[in-house]
Amino acid sequence: MTPRRVRLRFLLSGLPLVAALPLAACTSAGGSPAPTADRQPAPLTSPTEPASTACPASGVLIRSTGSDAAMGLRALGLELVNCGTAPYELNGYPVLTVRDEQRQPIQLRVVKGAKEITSGFDAAPRPLTLRPGDRATAAVLWRNTYTESSAAPTNGEYLDVAPAAGQPAQGVDPDGPIDLGNTGRIGVSAWKRADPTTPAQPPAPSAPSGAPSVVTTPDSRL
Image 1 (cartoon, rainbow, N blue to C red):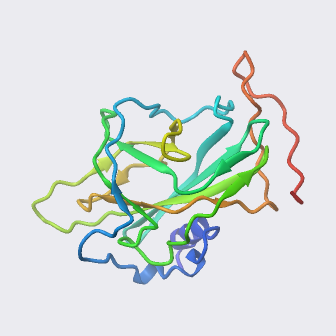
Image 2: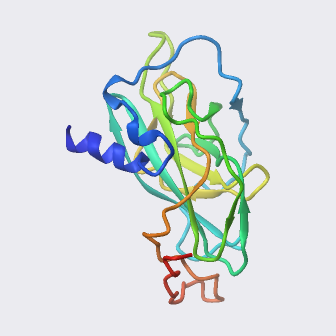
């Protein structure tokens, strides 16, 4: 197994069933769009710039954990950190807005669970209560595939992610171009609780100076 494919497996290993994802044999499913696919017109204004390390007013920070590609399959890890002082309720899927180099929203079908993109990516969402310092993870998946020779490719340069519909979006570093070929679709997994044995240092709630302060690492038993 090549280092690139090992890295891709690592990015998705925290998601249910994805550890067994047969990357070398992944194929796109044909036919009509899956019922879980939502064509979401993006708002005209959004952060587009990657979030700073200061805790947003919402009390949660969303950031990228890196990306990789194998056999035309692209994966980007997402992490949501409760950097606030109160529990945060989470249930469902991240809301994505992909933007072009002019920062204009790209019209895409967002596939919840990525049934049309690959298998082993469809664990249903569960209600989560994140205490301060807790984290949740998700992954974004797409293919650089051309299904029609006459169709122009779609390339995103910026990514905004909201914890749920109606919540403020944050700019997330996509770690490279979002090269969708001409598929017109992108998949996203449901949020799931991160492994508490590997806690991250969450940023502190915003101070007037805008600089994060020192935070005590959460107890790994929580």
